[in-house]
Amino acid sequence: MKKSGILNPELCAVIAGIGHTEFLVIADPGLPIPKGVPVIDLSLVRDIPKFMDVLEAVKEELVIESFFIATEIKTQSKNLYQQIRQSLPGLPESELCHEEFKRKLAQAKAVIRTGESTSYANIALVAGVNF
Image 1: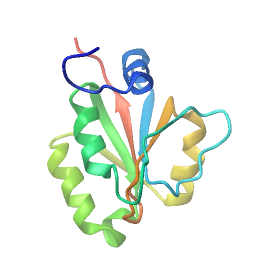
Image 2 (image 1 turned 90 degrees about the vertical axis):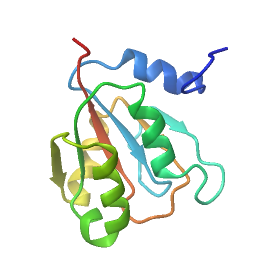
Image 3 (image 1 turned 30 degrees about the horizontal axis):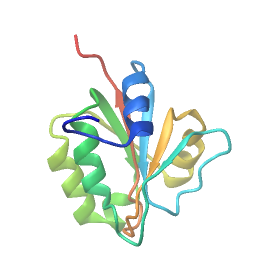
Image 4 (image 1 turned 120 degrees about the horizontal axis):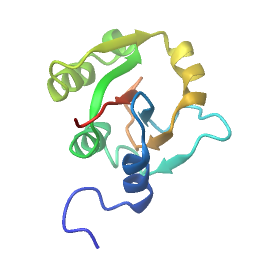
């Protein structure tokens, strides 16, 4: 058993195995995930776990080079967007419309499903390198 950090074995394995420029998605429970993309479903009940709790845990273990979000989060979920920016200061950000974001999911290394009920609570974290 690990002493600290992420305890979920599937999530630990995905983070350990992700390569440079591959991406991992943290998603709300409503995001449609294409067949064949691994899903790590952490959702328990509405809002458990919260999107930001999962992001905070993942960012402690994943080298993040950049991230991308759906443009709609900036207007539909301003508070969550501000929390993301505060959590990932200085990282390059890209935006796609929500439909494009959903299409890119087919390329994700994995999708982590949260219980978050905030609209557009989805982010793709692009892996960097630690050297």
